[in-house]
Every structure is written in C-alpha cells, then in structure tokens.
Image (cartoon, rainbow, N blue to C red):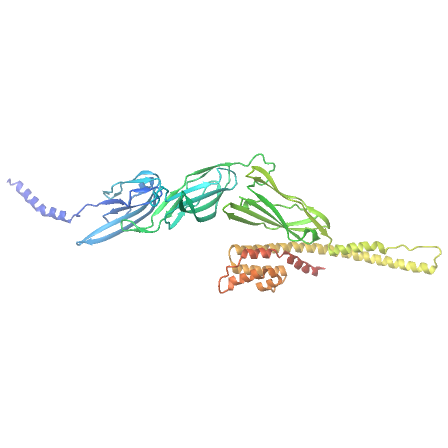
Amino acid sequence: MSKYLKPIFTRLLLLVPIVSLLALSSPASALTLKAEVDRTNIARSETLTLVVIADDNANSDIDFSQLSFQFDILNTQRSSRITISNGKKVARTSWVITLAPKEVGKLTIPSFKYKNAFSSSITINVTKEISSSNSSDGNPDIFFEVVADKNQSYVQEQILVSARLYYKISLANYEHEDFKVDNTRVEQIHKKDDTTIFRGERYKVLEELYTLHPQSSGKIIIPTQTWRLEKPSRRFGFGNTTNPYLYVRSKQLSIDILPIPDNRKTNTDWLPSKKVELSAEWKQSPLQASIGEPLNLQISINAQGLFDYQLPDLALEQTDNFTIYQAQPETNNIKDAEGVTGIRTINYSIIPRKSGQFKLPDISLTWWNTETNKEEVAQLTEQAIIVAKSNIASSNVIANQALPNTISTPTDTNNQSSASLLVWQLITTLFAVVICFLCYQLYKFKKVQRVVSNTENNYMVHFLSQEKISLSKIKNAIDIEHWQLLRSEIINWGKLILNDDSIDSLGKIAESFPELTLALQQLENKLYGQHADDSCNPQLLFDLIKRQRPLTQKTTKSQLKELY
C-alpha cells in the first residue's frame, strides 16, 4: 500500500463506528400519514366519517380545504396521544372529520400532506336515495319536499309554503337554517308532527308551514332547503361513538309575482285577500244618546291571508253634530293550517253636540278578491243615532215654553172703576218685574250651562285619554308576562274608573265589578297561591276589563255633579 493511501484508509476505518452509531440513533421507521373512511358507499342524504392519522405529535393542522369542493365539512376534531412501547415514545395525532356529499356520483377525497408524508386519495360512491332495508317495494326510508300552494301570486298576497319530511327510521333530532326568500316577508305559522300512509306504508311526517308575502313584482326564488337529521347514537369504527347525521335537500322553486292590477277603480290601500269582513258593535244603544255623553263604537276588520300591519285604519269624518275621538287600534293575528288572518279593531268615542236624529255615513273598505280576481267593497250601512236633549237643555225648553203663557195683556174698558184699574196696573208691574227677574236668571243659567258643557267635554276628553293609557299599560304587562306589574296596573285602572284613590287590592275592584271577580281571583292565585293556577287567562281578563264602559260613564257623571 502506498505511503500516501495508508493514512486515508486508517481514517475511513475510524469513521465506521461513528456511522453505525448514527444509524442506530435514527427512527426505526419514517413518518407516515394514513386516511380512512367508515364507508365508501353512501346516499346523498347521509354523512361519512373521515379519519386522518399521523405518526407524530402534531402541533399544526392539515389543510383540508380541498374537501369543500365536493363535500360539506360538518365537524372537525383533533386529538393527540403519546404511548411508551419497549422503552420508546410513540406519538400519534388523529383528525376526525364528518362530511356530507354535495352531489351524486363518484366523489374523491384528495391526498393530504403533513410535513414530508402524504396520504392516499379515496373514492366515494354517492347514490341518490337511501335504500330501504325493511321494505320490498322500494319505498325510501326518508324523503323531503318543499311545496307551495300556488305558482303565481299578486304582490303582498299570501303564499303558503310547506316543508315536509317523511321518514320511517328513528330520528333523535333535526335542525335547519332560517327559511329566507329575497324581497319577501317570511314567517313560520304552523308546525306539526303527524303520520300518514304513502304507497301502502306508514310514515312519520314532520311539517313546517310558512307564509310568504312578496314585496315586489317579478319572480321570487325559494332556494334549496337543507335539513340536518340526527340518528340515535351508535358505535362506528375507529373506536369513536358519535351521532351520525343525514342531510335532506329540497328542489328549488320559483313563483311569478304579479303587480297591482291597473284596472282598479279606486286608489286606496292594496288588500289582496280571499275574504275581508267589516263588523261594528255599539257599547251603548245609539237610540238613547244624550248631548255630551260619549257613545262607544267598535269597528273590526278581519282579512284572510293578511297580517294586522297590512290593514288600514278607518277614519270617521268629523261633523257639526258629533265630536269623534279615535283610540289606538288593537291588533291580532290568528295563525293556523289555513294561513294567517289579520284582525284590526278600532274604538271610537262619539260625543253628540246637538239633539235630534242623525246618521253616521257609510263606512267602506275596498279590497281585491284573489279568488274571483276582482275588486270588491266591504261596507257597513249608515248608523242611525237619536240624540235626546240633556237635562239642562230640557229644563231650558220648559222655561222657554212657559214664558209666553205668563205674559198677558189686561183688558182695558171704559166701564172699569179706578180701583180696578189700579189693581191691574199693580199686577202688570209685578208681572214685568217677574219677567225681568226670570230673564236675568235665564241669562245666568245659560252661562252656567255653557261652562258646565265645556267642562264636561274637556273632562271627558281627559278621562278617555287616561283610560286609554291605563288599558295600554295593562296590555303591555300581559304581553311581557309580568304578572305582578299586571296586578299593579289593574289596581291603578280601578282607582281611575271608580275615582277612589283608596283602592289597594283586586278584591275592592271586584266589589264594584262583579263580572271581574273570578278572573281577578285567578290572577291572585297565580301570584300568591301555593300551586300555580293554570286557569288564569290574562287575555280574557283584559277583554272583561275593556267591557266596563257603562260603569265608566256613571262615574264620570258623578264627578261632574260637583261642577254644577
């Protein structure tokens, strides 16, 4: 061996043990990344579980964004663990992902990268429906539909849309996003869980009913609706217990929305409906009206397929014969399987100014009949009112009628004696004095009458305003279900109606209004009873309170007596 090569060979021999030590200190195997699914054949409405495992204690996530092209990523969970085997540490990180296919066909779960390791891609076969496991006729275990009651509608007309889920498998729960349609007011009005027979088999049915009121003409699109269904828990592979999900989707619907017709005869509020009714109710007899005493007229509008906010107010025109005050309208919506029925109730206080026989003009409301496709008019016939004169006015009339009879002219004859003439002169003078006195008293009486009449009207306006505020507070307490506040506002109402500030309990109110006794007792039991009283109906109590109008009038009269 050359003297030059010998030192080099010696150095190489010294490197052998160093290289052996480095080889022994390296990992027994390279980093691996593995992807698995719990199944490769599913229906579009089903979900699958993807598990990605890395032999490493991962401190960062893998990029799974490519999955979103063909799948909805419903849930992602990551877990890490370290075990010791034969004195060596073994690390492992798992990602568990729940996926829902977006389409039917062969879909691909792509390869993922973590550091220098790659997983294998996986092909998933997605079919249209779940195959029935307990039926020989091929009926699906579950199907979903969204249907509308019409494919053409007027702007602001009611459209009923029903979302129905038919199923014959066990479901633990379901959920979905809000039902939304552009340029349309949407409201859920009904929901039920029922059963039905389909193709000879019994199905359970979940149904949600919505009303749609499009706000502009053209075409509206009801987008695809997706419901997520949850099956009861069971054990899958990979040692995990989870709630598998099913996704059901409906078809997209389109509805043509027609504009307001040009052939309408009137340019009033647009009310497209199947049926609109007007009704009127007097709280007192209009045949027994008196000057200065208010009559209470209640007019209600009922419209099928329209909400209360779509209904107009009906204004009664002021006349020389009446002073008319309008209270805040009361509104309500009745919702059922036929849709919505809006109710708007308007209360008027009508105070006669003159005596005689008068008539309120006709009250009418123009609406569009969506069944006959024609304009129609709901009408209330004219209301006759006979106004008697007030007590003061009647006394005035009697005095005026009596005065002419008290005036007489003595007969003057040439045959009367001077004594008789003197007597008649004295009588005439006396009558003149009496007439002047009566005229003076009549003048003062008319002045007092005007003051009392103005005071009475002003008081009545103030009283009606305070009563309206009190009833509004009671209604608000019922709406927010604040029963202690409701009790307090009813007591305040009793103080106002009975003009008695000493009233401090519902029992004292019941003494003056026996009709309220039971309802007030139920409210007390609800507040202070040992057991909850479910028989309490606050809305019924409110309706009974509003009926106490006759007592209100009597109280008002008694308060006015002090003014005379």
